[in-house]
Length: 132
Image 1 (cartoon, rainbow, N blue to C red):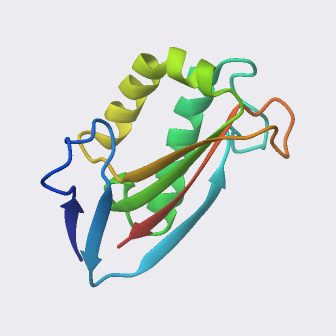
Image 2 (cartoon, one colour):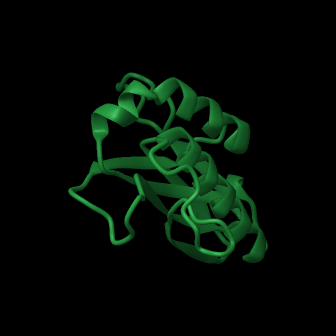
């Protein structure tokens, strides 16, 4: 599989994400929304957005490993948060966690604020698409 980052030349370079990724070859993996569950489906980091983000990163990595890939194979992430202002206030710590897991790989990303999640105590959910 080959992957090419697409950022229009006339646009300012995005920070922390890509506008698009073009792939050729490979199998697609659709990652269902991951929340801050531990392996026994207990919410990790109740009330702590950064701790929940870290757990979601671990869960995404575990799913990708089970699919035969890694986080660097992810081409699209959609991040759902209950409080955009809380997310933005903690962006530096969240970015640190992101870079620890993804390095300098920045998939196309979307951030969406929603009213509530299916599970109580969940502060964010992330779904994605990968190409192996």
